[in-house]
Amino acid sequence: MTSDKSQQYIQRGELKLLTGNANTKLAETIAKSLNTSLGEAEIEKFSDGEIKIKINESIRGKDVYIVQPTSFPTNDNLMELLIMIDACRRASAGYINAIVPYYGYARQDRKTRGREPITAKLVANLITEAGADRVITMDLHAGQIQGYFDIPVDHFTAIRLLSEYFQDMAYDKADEFVVVSPDLGGVRRAREFSDYLKLPIAIIEKRRPMPNVSEVMSVIGDFKGKSAILVDDMVDTAGTITNAANYLIENGAKDVYIAATHGVLSGPAVDRLENSKVKEIVITNTIELPEEKKIDKITQLEIGPLLAEAIHRINTYESISGLFEDVN
Image 1 (cartoon, rainbow, N blue to C red):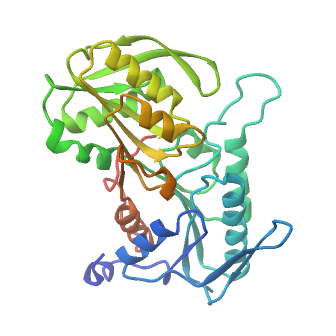
Image 2: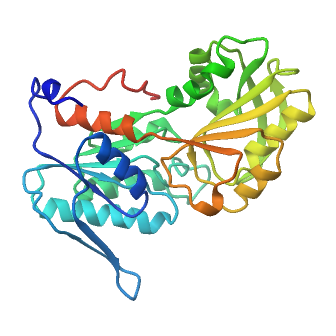
């Protein structure tokens, strides 16, 4: 983000970076990469749990970016985002950009039976109606969620960053490593990951008797005697992914690694990972990892500089194609 380069482009207005409480460390890293500071804002709760936000500096006419993944506690973080967008709109911000590295409710993207909501669409409506002009997000659980918005959505992926972590270990070692998709829906993601590393892929066929529960039926592809890299968009309760990892080990895989963008790690996830046969779990910091969930098996990669570069390019009307490969 050099000043000489930025002067070649028209700016949308002075850049102002704000953050909610969901991931302040990520916001600080983004600010540092942009050579700026976080805007002054107070976020408090009334005794009844209602959220109060006050922005303590002028943002009139400025290009405002709000960093707020809607991770646990999902509803509180979502309300913080909506209230902060509304505050910026009422303060006459020039542009309001919602940076939502992890988009909560993304798994409720369609109706699977009668009388069910499509909550991912509802959240998109709320963000738009609150006053956001643009949404920046990463590795949506379902790419079609981009179409739920009537405003521009920049949908980035961490697949390149995750694959680079395995570069020295696995690049072009098809006899030793295989990339594994944990289900049929993740094949495109696994294929992109494998293309970066020049590795073959395998696909796990499974069924879900109930939410957060899965049973491995079979594996399509050769994995025996190889180290397997399971690639997914998120690790939530870790039941599905650890079942897959244990199945691979028990049926001939040498080692199993997990690469995922979002470390949701809810409920018994950490215990399951710790007690599983997984050698290492590599995630990014789209979601802040609390101290009690930091175990030796988990490696967290930093996405702040990548998001900062995206913000800089949006602010100066530069092209962002190629910065990340899109996963539409």
